Image 1 (cartoon, rainbow, N blue to C red):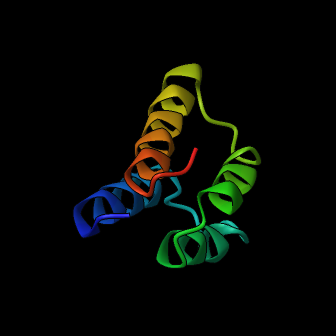
Image 2: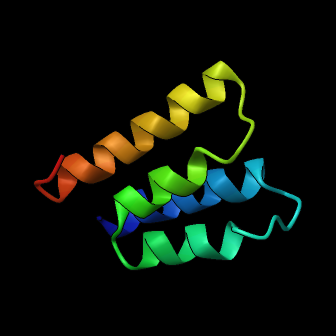
Image 3: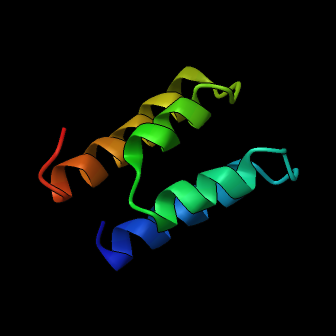
Length: 70
């Protein structure tokens, strides 16, 4: 993941997860360790709105595309 993409995803997640949910550190670790599959698994636990879910899924899709996976 590019540094800019990682920063964007982390900033967005931190804004959305203002409360320190137990898995927030795991999400941050998934991003730091370039593990989009783990991030998706954890994101599934978050009760996002449909629009929020589409946005974060799009960010993770771009992350996967930037690493040649997908």
